[in-house]
Image (cartoon, protein in one colour):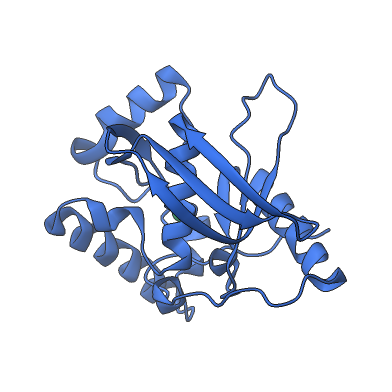
Length: 205
Ligand code: NI
């Protein structure tokens, strides 16, 4: 297994629509293992293949708590087939937008159809944090990011900051943000970030 570099905004790849997986072979299994290791290392609770620059419809998720055993889920070609009409609010973060968090409202429950690691068709009824995570990751496969749900002003400001960091580093994508200090303005998101630490919510995906 190996850890893959995670791309950051404003890398244009993050806005691409990923292609369905057509063949489950050894190569894909290895890729899934690498994704899982990359996600645990980050650390995050979800990762879409596009975040490691691979535009295929593959997601890894593990929302188990630190004191629980790992419970990885592999979603291949996931499709959300049902969404609850009841909204819920979660503080979200994203490994492709490191250090930035914002509250996002999404349907509190969803049902997702997908192929598992063995190519078997599965239907998962997700609620709570898992529901939010599934929706966040499936959004990635369609080129959407959680900042698309916040105000245009805050979104533009966030993208601008990351663009500046990428430019200063002289690297082609947003990769440079790996080594930078937090990019958010304290008066902007610090209260949310602090609340996040208190309740142990770790919705970074
Ligand atoms: Ni994300």
